[in-house]
Amino acid sequence: MPKIAVVACITCLRDQPRPVPAGFTDSADFFLYTDRKYPEEQTAGWTVRPIKPFDEDPVRTCRRYKYGLTELQFGYEARIWQDASLVLQRSPEELVAHVAATGHPVASFAHRERSCVYDEAEKCHEMYTDIQPRIDQHVRDLRTEGYPERAGLHETTLLVLMGTLGNNISREVWNRILRGSRRDQLSFDPALWKLRLTCCDLSRDWAVQTPHPYVPHAEYLPGVPELQSWLEWRDYHVQAVRWQQAYHSGKIGWGAWT
Image 1: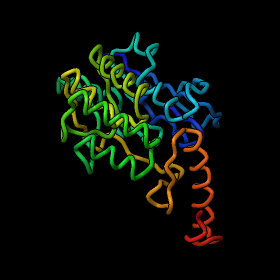
Image 2 (image 1 turned 90 degrees about the vertical axis):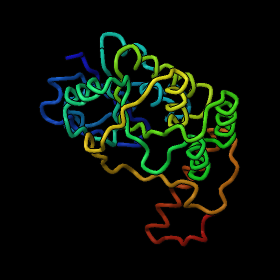
Image 3 (image 1 turned 60 degrees about the vertical axis):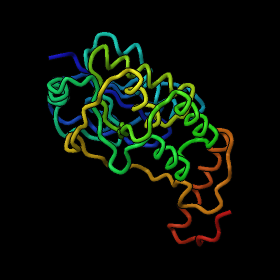
C-alpha cells in the first residue's frame, strides 16, 4: 500500500478541527496546518503544524497547503486533502485503493448543481466569493486559452492525488490560483483539461460534512458594492457578519443594512 498523507488547513476560525476517526492513523499520516491553537482533544490523531499567513487573504493561505505544498509531495505516494468541515467515513487506505483501481490520477466529488466552470464563475459573482475584477480576468484567461464550456465541474472539498500525475495536477492548479481567482473550482477542471487527465468522481459516502460558522454571501444582502481589493472585501464581510448576527438575533430588521 502506498504511503499516504492526509492534509487539512484552518485559518481565521473558519472551521473547527475534528479528531481523526479511530484506527485511521494506522494507514496514513494526518497533518493539520493552522494559525490557531485548539484543545488537544479536538486535534487527536493530527500532527498540528503552526503556519503564518502566506497571503493577506486567508483563503489563499489555505490553498497553498491544498495545492502548493511541495515539501509534502516528497515521500508520499498519495495525498488526500479534506476540508476541515469534512470527516472521513472510511479509511484513507480504502479510499486510495478505490481510486488506484480506477486508474485515475485524481479523485473528487462531481459538482451537485453545475457542470461548467463559466457557470460557476457567474455563481461566484452572485455569491461574492472573490473580488469581481479577479473573477472576470480569470474567465478572460480561460476564454483566451480556449477552455470549452460544459467541460465538467468538481467540488474539491475532498481530493485524492496519486503519484507524479497527482503532483502535476496540484502544481497546475496552484499556478492558476496564483495568477487568477482564489476559487479553486475555477482552476481544477481547466488544469485537468490542459494536462489531458481525468478525474474519478467519488460518491459522497466517503466523507460527511459537519457544520461550520456561517459567513453570509452577497446574495443575502442588499446593495452589494463593487469591491476592487481584498482589503475592501474583508472589511465588507466583517460588516456583513455583524449584520447577519444582529438580524438573526432580532436586534435589527432587514432594512437596517447599509
